[in-house]
Amino acid sequence: MSIQDGLMPGIERRLTGVINPSIPSGSMWPKFIVNHIMQGYQSTMINWADQRPPVNIIAVHFSIGRTGRIVQHKSIWDPGYHVAWGDYNSNSVGIEHEGFSVHPGAYAPDYIYNVERPWPTVMIDASIAVHKWVVEAVRTYDHTFPVGPHTIIGHNETGQPDRIHDPGQLWLAQVKPLILAAFAPPVTVDDFQRGRTEMYEAMMTMTFNQTVEVVALLQANQTRLERLRNDWGIR
Ligand SMILES: [Zn+2]
Image: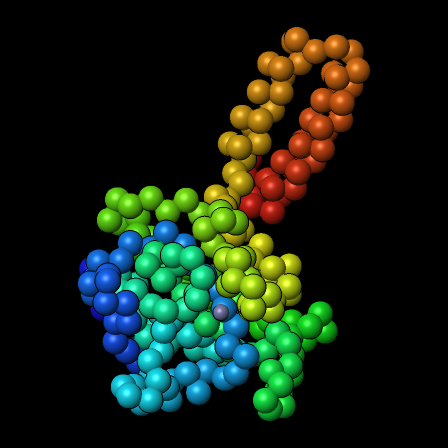
């Protein structure tokens, strides 16, 4: 298990084959991470992985259960087949998440994610861990992976018209911001000090009204700085 073989350390593996013959095994460079919802259960996906071939080929790189169980199904350097639209199968890592965003129709779901029963925190945390490892692995090979809302996406953001509920509006509102925030650098006292210095310098060229606005910002900044100092015991 290593970055070199594209397998996340310390997690379960139920590996399946390469599915895109135009991209040889081990040669895919991920530029996107595409998030999906199973509209079903992780146990089904694991059964598929165990039965392949010939029954089903698991076409995503990871599945994540509601309990935070992470299972890897392919190396991140191998292509999958999880987006039937555009070029994503040759340049993205796919992550499937357990549960339902809408009624699947064919059978009764146990429940559908909504504001009262949102995505489970442990599943989100597991998903964040996978996202962070993938980005770190790509960057280890000196490839860029600009983390942002256009590289970490839902299947519904690929343009595929029949996937507007995958992983769903709740994912966009609840989960995607948490994933992106997990990559943001932590704010430090130095950041506040630098911001304050820059504002003082900018004030030299300002009108009176602009200065009044900046003073208000500085006061808010000072309040936040003091709270940080108290929370962290910084002097
Ligand atoms: Zn999907």
